[in-house]
Length: 200
Image 1 (tube, helix red, strand yellow):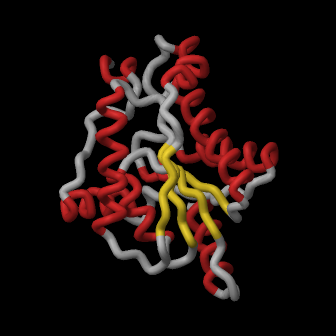
Image 2 (image 1 turned 30 degrees about the vertical axis):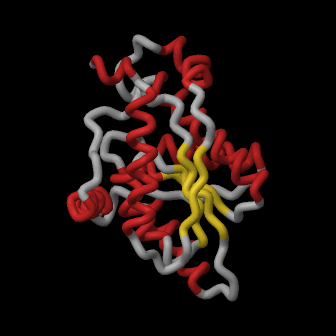
């Protein structure tokens, strides 16, 4: 609950400001992004970042990227939403996570993956002059929001880009993402991304 209150306090502060801040939002997929964009777009000028080198095979990666692009075309947001696709590099993911290949879902392999994706998002946010960065990962009931937020806060201090704390699955966020996915006919994948998780 503390993360929700912290986010709501931040959004109330932003709503009362004279300018609209820029947010770089790491998006894992269109279904998760659907609710988060709906929730945050009244407060920010958002640029989505599709950086997910964990996703295999490449055809699956491209399919999810296409669905995110389609979502942005289908939806009218209170503030404009731009998009940024990072280069695909499965080798980058392998270098970060291969030592933990036999770990169970939610273990060190997943933590290495989260660190990689958030680390690159923080770098893009800093170099692009964004006011904040965040991730849609916390909308998933299968992801540890506390760990994601700890990692984001640590990277914020290291990289000098402000991290937006969140637990988007709360207040029926995940439920709303399912509703929006049905509304827009979004492809909902059956696994997070890596082949180790797919085989589990």
